[in-house]
Length: 73
Image (tube, rainbow, N blue to C red; front, top):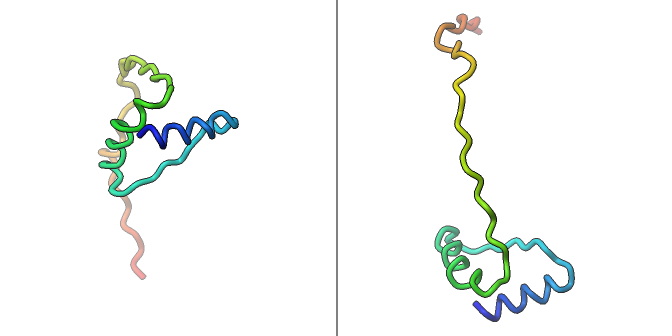
């Protein structure tokens, strides 16, 4: 947690702003990083935009057409 965060902050002070972190198994490591590392980093929480309503447009045509038989070789 705090040790890794300190090292990331050192890199950030040098101007590095993107990090690729990897672990296995992926889901468990993602939770571990979120719970143990992120609280020690001074990162902004992104704003989640509100979902926009979808307007049904267009028409489905795939159901009306049957593919022509392919020539047999």
